[in-house]
Length: 120
Image (tube, rainbow, N blue to C red; front, top):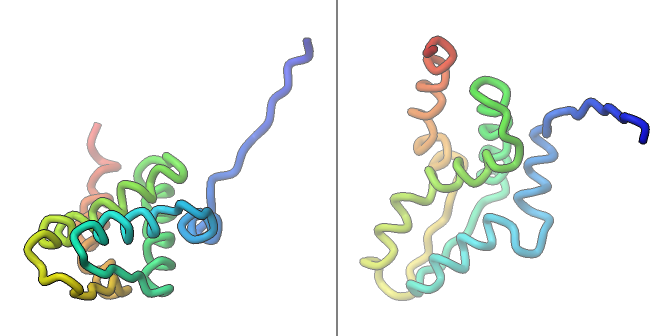
């Protein structure tokens, strides 16, 4: 046996965007189908998906690098309120996730991440 060592690079913003959009059962598609069970139409702007990838990459660099799993935690934060409200929405209502909505939902996470590096 020969010991082999490799050094891996962290996922970039572009890598995270590809993970969000390219697989057939990507996270955005999963959320669309989940909210669709409440007869609500959910769509994601491309800018919103890019902002999600950007934020996930930033959090991976500043807090802890957990790779693509960060996308799931970021998506949960964005979808939390929409998921709870979907049951009360009218059938056929359309909800669009925009870049501004992503920034609004994640603003507190980004401000808290600055303090997390000082906690022992």
